[in-house]
Image (cartoon, rainbow, N blue to C red; front, side):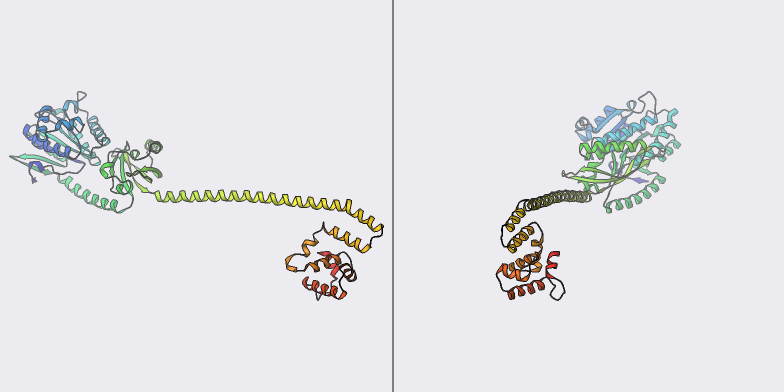
Length: 475
């Protein structure tokens, strides 16, 4: 049991805290709740105050305005609602625990959507009739079991004079701690069981927080609507936003419109089928405007009743990897284009070579036809008319060589024959003797023999028993 100043009796409690507040007078109510809601408004929390006797709506507003001075501005911007219990607990004429709990959860979602840090609420149970005690006790137990998963803080106010001793004990057991006035001092009574659980959870939370802050990935949780209820600090490194800027929003709020629609359809399908998702790539917009590619893995979360309550998962920045993949794809595309261009050039070159070869063959055929049809018949006539036979035969031989490959082959570089030697080779190939060569070229027999030796040497047949004329005809 602790004694604390009134303004600090509740303290800086974390989200998910469920508090019971026992009072006797209107002043007891105002003393705790005015300070409680003032703190919430200053911390950008959405506040919902459900009033009942002895502190009704107008009196509650007056007490809070006295402390704040600018309550109307908070009301106008929708940060606080102060309503009567009949508009909340017994809206349908009777108390319906499921509807009331659903109402709190919906208010939390609405608060987060509007950019508030969470929901700070309070309900005065003065209106409760004895016949409904079991309903409210079961409701409080249900709230106590689920509130820890939400960005909510709740204070439930009970009139001490209307509660029996066992009822006071049951109320305390259904809350994390109780605030009770002892004479002129407020005291805080811890639920021992909850305190032990809280200490265990705090130790686990510390380890979890240390883990999430050391790994490079971003850990998150969303509810069924896709609204973030938890994000690890790594979101700052990935998207540039503070945790408080992300809570209450959905993943789709950080995506380009078309991407949000695409991923939204996938999320909806997974939600309907209550399925996990792995390796889901999506494009997000960093706070600085740059696009970031994330890879998401997520698993469904189920409540105690087996109902899907949301998803928990990890986001990993794969922007660098995607950029490398895109660069590789672009490089491969360029290589394919270059290969295609080279193949087209090779095809064009092949067609050009084939065209040249066809033209060359056609020219050769034309020359051969012209020689056979026109030139050789004239040579026969010259021979008949008494022209020197050797000169006529030599001319015929040269003309025939025009349509053969001998001239090209005999003059190839490896042989290095001189012009005179090539000329002699051509005469010898035609069946003429060394004597004929000397007469036709007007050179001595000695010179002719010298040329023959050089030719045999350059052709590589110097020391071989090979007839030069026969060899030349085989070239």
